[in-house]
Amino acid sequence: MPLLTAEDTAAAIVAAAVWAPSVHNTQPWWFAANGPELSLYADCGRQLPVADPDGREMLMSCGAALFTARLTARSLGWIPRTALLPDPADPLLVARVSWAERAAPAGFETRLFGQVQQRRTHRGGFDPVPLAPQLLTALQAGAARDHAELRVIPGEASQAWLAATIQAADQATRLDSRRASEQAAWTSPPGSPRPDGVPTSSYPAHPTRTVPDFPSRDFARGRGWGLPPASTDATAHSAGVVCLLTTADDRPADWVNAGQALQRILLTSAAVGVAAALHSDPLEIGWTRHLIRSHTADSSYPQLIIRLGSVIQTAISVRRGPASVLAARAAATPGRAHASPPAAAPGPGGSPDGHCSPAARRTHCR
Ligand SMILES: Cc1cc2nc3c(=O)[nH]c(=O)nc-3n(C[C@H](O)[C@H](O)[C@H](O)COP(=O)(O)O)c2cc1C
Image (cartoon, rainbow, N blue to C red):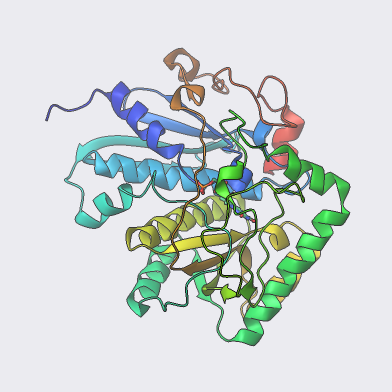
């Protein structure tokens, strides 16, 4: 097969990277191609100013896109070279990925790549089927490669305690109109053509209750939106294997790495038919995040709660097309202080031109 041009390679990488998970499906990224090099930028016009004022979840989402970009380069037979947060003067430049050397992809890389567009976030309970211990060992080793730790929360008492922090955060969101409006702004009504946010096709109208009770976010807000139940069985389901993703520190590089680890975990699980439910709400509120952190023996920083298990998934998600997030070559001219994002609609609450003011760069990206 003839080699793709650098331009086509960059386009193929971006076309896959957009399928990374992101908080509320904000897709807070854009890319600039320059020969055999891609720059990945955080788009803080798509940041959640209330839930994510520091840009932690925005950078985790970008980290997931970065892992997908690197994996796609591997699937095309390139060895990617990555520079993380390479320009201290531009905190929105998350990474530069370049490719020059070739090596055939390994079997597991091809299998993971095969899941990039298939994988879906699960919301609800799992079938009571135990996971293979080898899978958990592989996931933990994978997270360590991205400088993160995947901790399994053992025992029902610890799991119930963690579930209670999610219940508390859920209540706090319902009672805080700014939080609730921000979440609602990233939720679309049925039939919406919107290519971002959380569509009604991606969550159940009546999520199964789990034991202990890990509530899903209330995207529908009592309007009955969501997928019809897959079965009439109303009994509680397993919460699955409950895990906490942590990092030793809590700087932007840790957030990007946590996002890379997350996508590696999700794709590795999906490759063996294991789904994941994600809970970040208690980590968006200072006191609940602090509480969870105080329960980690070494005061590591909690980045995401992940539940893993077996279930038949019917969820469908949406994405902006690669053309909306890949800047034209001219915009990526070396020597420019900041490359410009493609002209695309910002998310709700985003600045109208998709650019961030210097103040926003400082506030949201430290
Ligand atoms: C940092 C981060 C936090 C997330 N938090 C939640 C969450 O609290 N609840 C939830 O249901 N999904 C959560 N998600 C999943 C996103 O909603 C999901 O990735 C997005 O809607 C796209 O759908 P997909 O993963 O099925 O492609 C989170 C994802 C990321 C990357």
